[in-house]
Image (cartoon, rainbow, N blue to C red; front, side):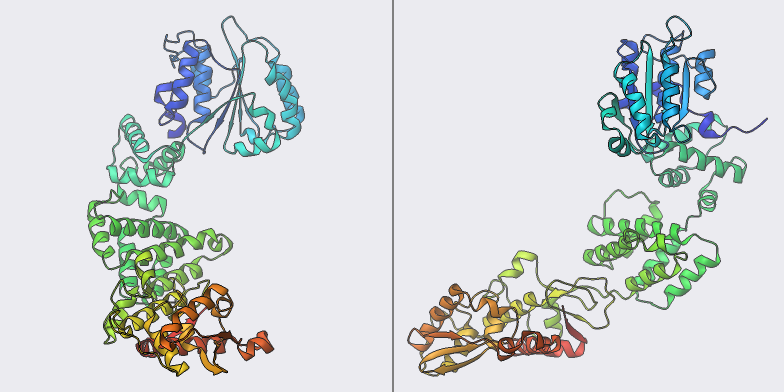
Length: 576
């Protein structure tokens, strides 16, 4: 006797047996019980979630002579048996729209639908699977009969891509009752697999069934097919090892080993780890998808150690211990880099996914940990800047400035390592400069009670004002400190370095703020003139990126000498 697949053998025979789709099954059952069945239905949803099954159960209920008062078919009579098995029946016809998609097929269906059912009290049901494959002309041929159907004729269209029907034949949607099917949850799939195994006289540990359920990705039919494969391999006994062998899954221990490689920055070990996977016949794409799950689990455990994650208790404890070695931001960047590999299509385009996966793992292993800027200054022998002072208001708004010694890109200039991996984010230079200027200003700012002694030396007055940070426009401190100042017939002439601050110095509000701030230091309200840098006036395009970087770094060094030491010792460079 030929073997019947579990997905066919254990197909539900009643509305109540269809898992997860209660919002559909209950509505249809009540419609049958109260004689309120519509003339056309559109079943939408992922593959393997019960669309065709519920269409058959509906056809069984409408034509079952022993139907219950609640609308459930008996499931055992000759009519129910033929419909349930998908055999030819006079009043229930299943059509595959993928191979019968043309206008001639639709016209033939329309003509057949005009004939009355075979007996009194019976209903003709046309189940059209893969309905999105019908052509626009075919839909047009069915439009009239769907609008004015013959008595006791029902159409059920099943599709995984309703948007294609919307594009090809939008008027059809208004003539059908639409039901959207959900993906089946892991717990529902596990319960169903356990029930099927019990009926088959077999059993399996729950952790093995959960692996199958996760792999099925919400499809009950896929889960039963995978279970069928495992039973074929083992002869009836299902365990975790046999499930992994059939599915080609990588053991959790391999991922724990990978996390250790990344944590300890053992870059050379990446190649050996991937080579072992290839030598043992593992699918690297499956390994990649497992990596996404592990990184996501690490992040959840790092953010919430008590999070309910779907892993074995022993593995959970080991992942939780390793998660503490990473900052949440590091895990976010690692997960983002891994997700980008698939979203950019690198794996799908590559005939050999080994190289992109190795590059991803290397980038993760080269990832240096995020360090607070205050910790960096403290480690170099300086005191961290106090909070709340002038020029540090931005720290409280974004949780503090951070520097990382790996590469990255930002819209503005940023300080980061030249040996970057490209995974983490860099610190915007304006944030760094603002914070550095703020810390320097705090150290030099005279107490409010100390009187300001005016001076006739414009340069001296300028330096005293900028260092005091009193009235200095927000974000302009470093640029003003690096600007050249001179006196021309009593007027204060400012010549800034080329950079983003040049445009701001042209604003009347900024000019007025400078005049107001300089007044107590000069003892008079100065006339102010801003002269554009010579290179900007003559030929802006001749200013090279290197010159701008050098000038900006010089300004930073003047404001915070300790930063120069950090740049030299940590091999930092200014990035754009």
